[in-house]
Image (cartoon, rainbow, N blue to C red; front, top):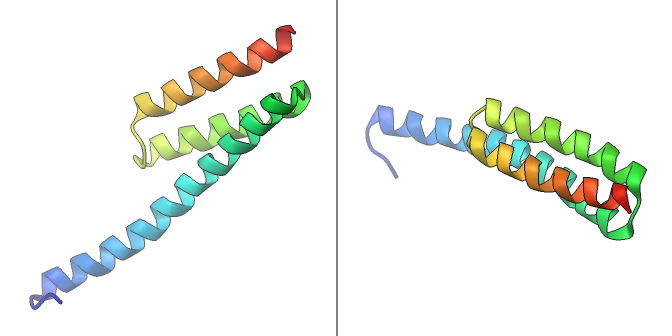
Length: 89
């Protein structure tokens, strides 16, 4: 356990940030998984719908600096490519 007052505060702050970041990460991860499931099923409409939700969640995570903006862009790009591939079929 920390002894200094500032170290104790830092522990409290870190705990709060960890919880907040976990919620944000969980939001885009679950949306991402649902999009991938819809793609696997071949459901075009559902895949498009979940892709939009995933893109929004990724942008929010990048905006709040939970993930890097380029990571969000890469994930969106790859997922969009998969959604477009099933739309063409």
